[in-house]
Amino acid sequence: MAINLIFGKEIKTSQGMIHMKTKSRGKGEIMEVLNVLNLTKQYGSDDNLVKAVDDVSFKINKGEFVAIVGPSGGGKSTLIHLLGGVDRPDGGKVLIDGEDLYSLKGDNLTVFRRKNIGIIYQFYNLIPVLTVKENIILPAVLDGRQVLDDYLNELVKTLNLNNKLSYLPNEISGGQQQRTAIGRALINHPKLLLADEPTGNLDSKNTKMVMKLLKYYNETYGQTIIMVTHDLKLAKQASRIITFEDGRIVDDKNGH
Ligand SMILES: Nc1ncnc2c1ncn2[C@@H]1O[C@H](COP(=O)(O)OP(=O)(O)OP(=O)(O)O)[C@@H](O)[C@H]1O
Ligand SMILES: [Mg+2]
Image: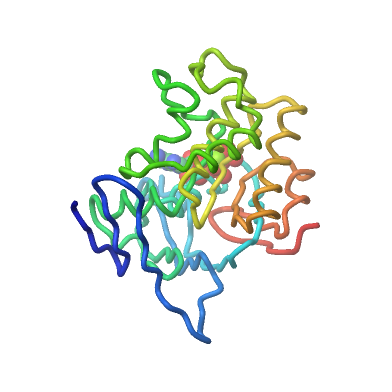
């Protein structure tokens, strides 16, 4: 059985469960799950230069539910992509639970992302040829990891997808597709759940259902969540609201 040592974590990758040796932490325990330092991302050059993320620094503690709001084109999606490791910054650092995301290369970055970061998008991004169940367990399967039946059953029950597991994405509603995407994002117990306009394509009933689910995972399991939204009513349900404009944080305050 292959054993990879990735940043102090012993991971058996062929079959069976992942065994993790977490770092022992004493009094100086890192409370922040996310530490962003002088993060910068630019597009274009000269007259067309856009500073989508402009020297941004902030921290997010474990268990926070953070809403990011701000005008269109302000850089919210760019920031989410940088936090999720799906883009590369021009400068600065993203530390997730103390690990420097962009010091990881190739497969190490892929594995780290899959284990530690869940992402939900406005348009679901499900794999069309996989069933609801196969989409949800995909990140675990890619890790060569079994999903415990009890955990999967509880997850799909909470997501209210138990009778849709064998359906394909195009056979279910938008709300059900987004709940499938939430399941996929949560299957590996990520340290950080990122959501970019997760309700942007949903009607009010499904919007309420998705918000209820996110709050449930935040309140019940202490899931750390960063959610971009245009909807100020939704943002107010978060514990913290960051306003992002012209690539910078212009306001950072408590929510509800
Ligand atoms: N791949 C790209 N190439 C060039 N410019 C880009 C690219 N992606 C984003 N931008 C520019 O970066 C800026 C920030 O875009 P971003 O999509 O992050 O904004 P946003 O806050 O998510 O907007 P919205 O609320 O409309 O989703 C915009 O000026 C955009 O045009
Ligand atoms: Mg956006």
